[in-house]
Image 1: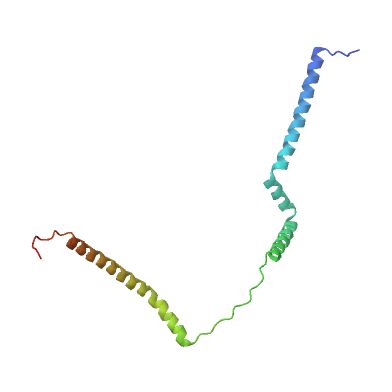
Image 2: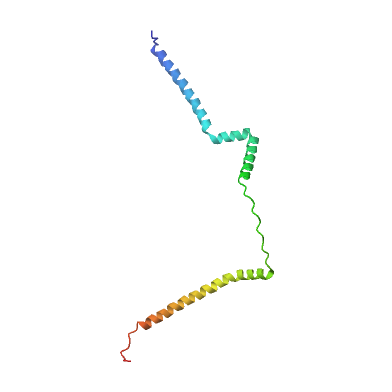
Length: 134
């Protein structure tokens, strides 16, 4: 007792079935796009509930600051130096660059003097002794 449709009716039924499936798939694709579009969802939520977002950000900022707060250190006792020691420290600080330059020049002159003397000594030792008997 199979009910047989004429070919035209069968084709029309298949066309309607395809159109229904296509419209269902289009609707599902639109819904899926909306679910996956996170920036648009956040933008919409911000427009709909701005007070909730503001209070939430304030609460989360307060909680983070309370959790990440460092314990205050005890202030170190300041050593009060007298005027002569303070002046001595300032003088040494001012003299340091000049001392570095002077010391560098002294080392350079020592090294160049040492190389000159070693060059002179090497030429003296490399001379052929004279044939005069002692």
